[in-house]
Image 1 (cartoon, rainbow, N blue to C red):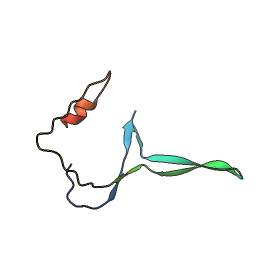
Image 2: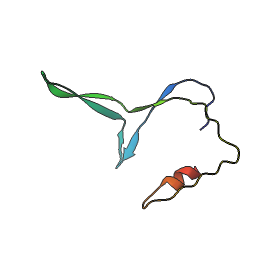
Image 3: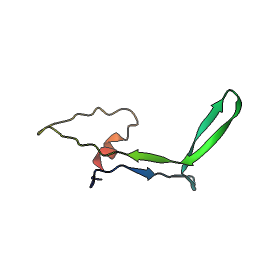
Length: 76
């Protein structure tokens, strides 16, 4: 994915497992005078564009770990 404009944004995310869809997360709201409660929110990630300059001819190495799926992600 390439950035096309220098604007911030948010990406709503969902996961599917065992035929169910999940798209929420929660924070525990807790204070000494109140009973703890859960604040449910859509699962989102903030997108922030950054200007990156890469040195010409830069080479990067990667050492794979056990059960590592990073090489497949890099190939994408």
